[in-house]
Image 1 (cartoon, rainbow, N blue to C red):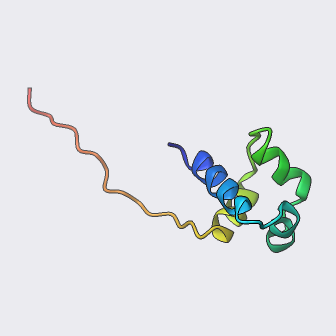
Image 2: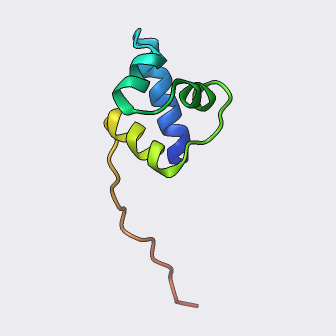
Length: 73
């Protein structure tokens, strides 16, 4: 699952607790209209807004070890 989908699902879950899109917008500085488009219309956010929302929802980026490719053969 890509990170945008993970953030969208987390936001929907957050909103299901009774928090409003307006409150999220106030807390993050992202417009209510933009948040609505992200949640309902599944339009993507720009990098800056994605980072704000991810931080608000408690996400952090970690790097996995790169996959190794066998050179035998």
